[in-house]
Length: 418
Ligand code: HGY
Ligand code: MN
Ligand code: MN
Image (cartoon, rainbow, N blue to C red):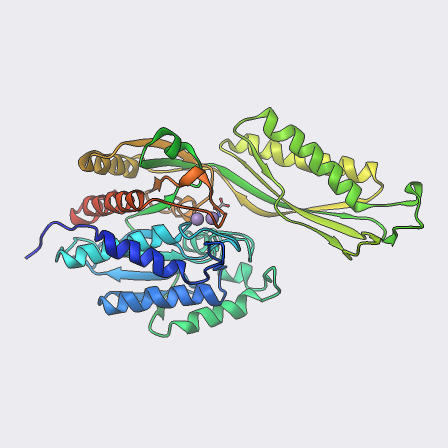
């Protein structure tokens, strides 16, 4: 006998707290970087909980982790929900984890209510969404969407020197109960719940964001090369100082790009100097540039602008410059059939919602290339994310999961093709 499924609020909140303890940092965040020990521990915990509920657990060769609750008709492609479990090095407890755990709560709520869905519902934790330890980000969802292959990235080394292929093998082996299946199986649709990671929903006091699109992202690595020399004996006219070139390029980009266009985003997140000695003019200086824009042509123009400024700085300071692209994510639009279903669910639940474009990239950006996809956002305090202070209220977590459950009922209970 089935009853109306309900989100078990206490169970969801406890689950978020349990996973926040894996890789917990003293400042209240998490350091659960892709394919590391803590990431594997989180995957293990989720898989054990899934097996305890009688769900099927499997993974693919890039270690995307899937949890499947069967439906009445095994021939129908499953509905996919979920997000990621990996975090930034000083990440928040909710980025990725909330979407993955809310999706798991939906499976449990359906099971508790004895609901048999027409199509199976699968929860996914995609591998390496963040891209901080291994670049690029979204490796798991790119591979799932056929945009990249594991072979493309196997020889990449992490920022701490680990080799991706080795840690991938270790991660897969950590879950012997999860058979490794071919990558990229058919799905009917994908819905990802995530924190907004920006201030809009909180400022407008709206509990649900209906995400209609994701802006484009490019990651560049810029390396200025000069001549290492003695800090004390080398007059200015004898210097080929890559630090001066880097500082000039960064200052020029930061004073021009975002002030000129309120939709543009430019971030220099990491800079290193070799040999990094206090009394040596560096031989080289490398820094990363993360640029974003909702419009593809404008993003391409920003890319050209960064290259031009860096080449000008290299000439001014008599250095060489090499610029390589690490990530190129075109902007993506989500399916109105799914955003409409999310809006209907909000109406049924009496929750205000508003449409919005995501400033952050997400796994949904790539999955949207192979199936109807959309995202549900919930507010986070002061819009802060990628920061240990990231915070979401219990009420917003529960509302988000309730909307996700309602959307799953719409997309999996009837034989509706999204
Ligand atoms: O950087 C991003 O947009 C994502 O949050 N990793
Ligand atoms: Mn995320
Ligand atoms: Mn993130």
